[in-house]
Image (cartoon, rainbow, N blue to C red; front, side):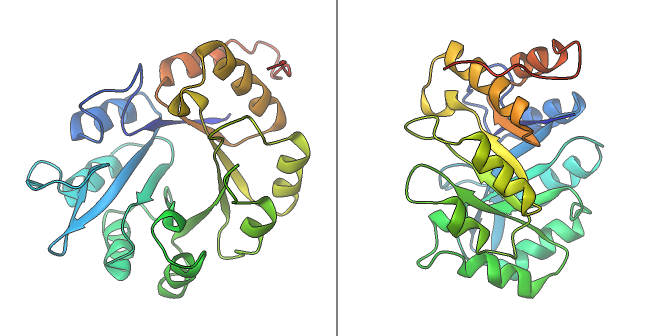
Length: 232
């Protein structure tokens, strides 16, 4: 069954409560995975898409511990800053999330593609890592060169570019594939739902979305176990 990953703890639409503990708990209670943003301030990890002055309500340790209490989907950790790498691995390990969590988007914060993932791999053989592919000069070929990454984070910013051939290539290389849903880049709902059906037909392992409830409805509406490819 494809995994539903809640973007920053959203499940109906985007919210100003994004990345908060109550939102993340709510999605875990529904059995969904969670995507969240990891930052550091004075050596203390916290959860927020944007930098914060007051991190008292967003400290990462209790949030990660809370996530570990639920047998839900993957925990996608967006690495917003390429600092405290050993501490990041220890944070996930100490919370008991090594088997569920994976680190991704290091490429957006580093100076040379792949160097952070390679460092994470040297620090731990158990931590899970994802390589980005997108329509912004992040190709499938380049992602597959990062053999330390067992997961692909597939993003479509400006167009629905990925083809079934691309996904076959990634799966043949042994990669899991998690796709970013189009509403995060302002595609219309009808196009997003059609794209979901297409990606599910092609065998993605999961989709990260603000619209978890709708995605669950689409997945449950598949009565015969297959997804029909839809035109976009």
